[in-house]
Length: 224
Image (cartoon, rainbow, N blue to C red; front, side, top):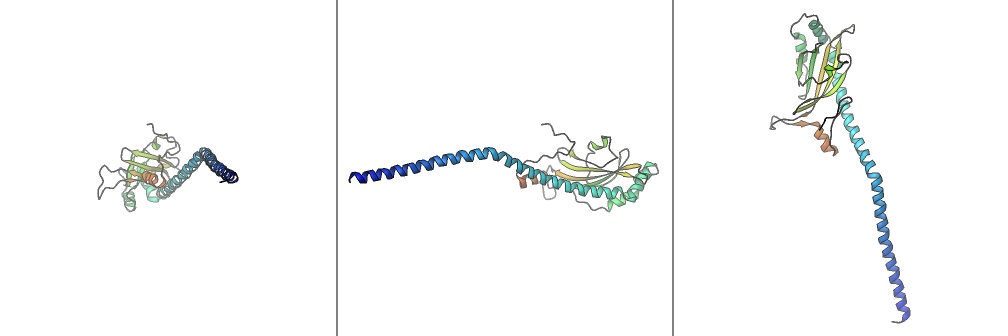
C-alpha cells in the first residue's frame, strides 16, 4: 500500500473519530440540558398536577355540600319542622311531635347519610339515618344564625361532612336547626358480606395517585 492510500485512510479514521467524539459530546450536552430542564420544570409540573387534583377533590366536596344544603334548606323551611320546633319552644310538647317523626320516617336516605333536628338548646329532638358527634359548630357565636359546615370525626371509625341550617319562624325568630350528614370514611372493625368499609379519601388516593387529607376553611390541621 503506497503512502497516498495510507494518508487517505488515516484521514478517514480521524474524520470518523471526530464524528464519534462529537456524538458523545453531543449526548453529554443533551443529558446536561435535559437535567437542567428537569430541574427547572419537574417541580412546577408536579405542583400543577397537585393543583389539578386539589381542584378535582374540591369540586366533588362542593357538590356534596350543595346536595346537603339543598336537603337542609327544604327541611328548615318545611311547615312540619317549624311547627314542631315552635311547639317545643313554647313547651307545648315534652317530646318530639309525632308529625315530625313521621316526616323524617318518610325520608329515603342512603345508608351513609343522616338528618337530625335540633331545638335551640341545642337538643336533638328527631333524627333519621346516620348520627355523629355534634362537632364544634354549636359552640360558635354564629350557631343558629347562618349555615355552617365542618368535618366531624368519630374516631377511629368515621369521618363525615356536617352541615347545619338554622330554622326560623315567619318573623325571623330562631327555632332550632337542621343538621345533615354525609360520611366520607366508615371503617368497619370487621369486614364481611354484611359489613363493608367505605373510604372516599382512599378512593381519591387510588384514582389520583396522591395522599388526601381534608381540611375545611377555619379548621386546624391535625397535630402528628
